[in-house]
Amino acid sequence: MDIQIPIFDSIRDVYNWTGLSTASLVSEEFTIEQAPQWSNNKMLKMPDIYRANFFTIFFISEGTAAHRYNEDLLKLEKNSIFVTTPGHYRNYLLDDVKKASFICFTEKFIGNYFFSDIYNEYPFLLSEAFIYTKLNASDAKEIQTVVEEIAKEIEVNSIVRPYIIGNLLEFLLLKIKSTLPAHLNTMSEGSKNSLVINAFYKDLDNYLSDILKGSNPKELKPKDFADLQYLNEDYFSKLIKSKTGRTPAAWINSRILSEAKTLLTETALPIAEIATIFQFGSSRYFNSYFKKQTTMTPSRYRKSLHLN
Image (cartoon, rainbow, N blue to C red; front, top):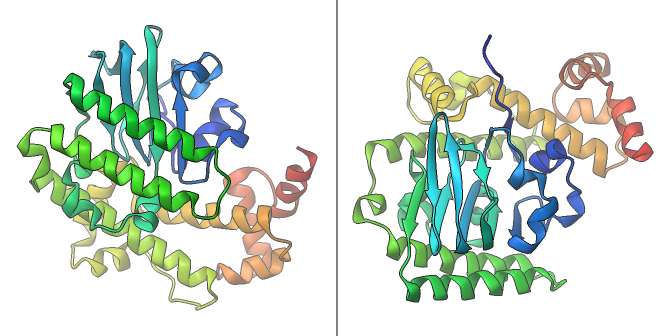
């Protein structure tokens, strides 16, 4: 019997799965954890493997750690960087870490708060493999300074905070890029596959944005998303499934459910109106769909939030 490895679309989903308080999240799209906080951090210390559809940068400045994948164990040494891109497995061993930082951010965050063409400027973010590099003392010190600046900025309650963090994160990526081998900073075949995946994510974002704006766009199915990239539907679906662990249909369904939950959580819109926004034929159909996905009706889900 196959073991079902959880796949999480957001940082909040991982926090909820591990039972962590989401109050520590900086935003839905960015968070940073540091070594002194890890004693109670289940997300970093849990034994279970999971996949996450956001980026992580793990910077170790003192001590050692490890990352486990299947039967392989990669030792992460002092003054090193370990980068994981969306869709990859996460399973960390952190017992010997003394000082380190763990940064999580989504593609949406860098899309909103970066000024450069992300993947042309930082092609290593499209890597199909884990990225691990050891740093010299000078590079490690400079990266430590940037990480500390990010941590300080998080404590500032300001409307410009995400923009400042975005600038600091971009500088951090630029510094990481300068330490990597040349082949990780060029566009490979694997990178081209990742461009297909990221284009799908962006097309899906645009589709959901149109829905939420009330534009009533035509219902898009996997074939429509393949057509947007002039790709064969079968090839497109197999590529998305093999690289992310989910079919395009599952991604579409997951995003619709996530946005519906957001409206139920953060607005007082009637359930019938939410059903209309997402182009369900009736409230009854929406109720049936939502209960099938969550085991609760929309109204019960909304009430459960107030109970918590």
